[in-house]
Image (cartoon, rainbow, N blue to C red; front, side, top):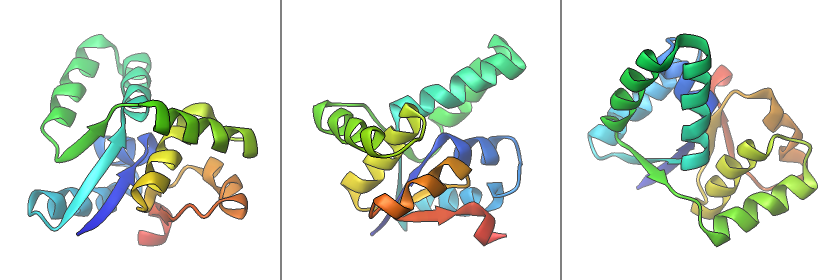
Length: 138
């Protein structure tokens, strides 16, 4: 079964009906139908939550979290392997540490990272990371 890892950019695109959100919606529908598995690192979930709280307040954040909890996304907590993989990537690439967790999870799962975050353009030359760019889906 096909697997995908969503980063915070992808989930926010879906939640805020931004460009690329349509592709995430299709993946969510496929996951609901049992045709794929979707994953997200808990660190990236935290990014979605702090961005939502900062931009829309605590009440909207609670609504958003309840909505996310209903989605067919498996939230993966960090463990030693994931943390060390993220740290290794951070040592090699000039991207945000939180982004390294999504990339590391995608590498561990051997699944594409679904994103449109331009930071990840710095990763592909030094990594075998598979990326599904949302902008190429429009």
